[in-house]
Length: 74
Image (cartoon, rainbow, N blue to C red; front, side, top):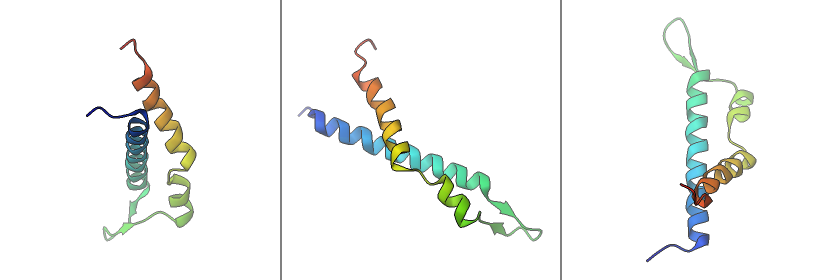
């Protein structure tokens, strides 16, 4: 059975949420460092909070994805 518009928008929002969380994890890994003994040092809570995706980031990504879905020229 085909999905209705609400289901499609929910799927797109879930994809955007996943995309932004993956971007967060990649950025978090890029900010980790290691001490002289090779032990991983996590970034500060302030840095983590600055990297964590905001609702506006997720919505922006969802709009980008949904624009692609709406484009009938593809």
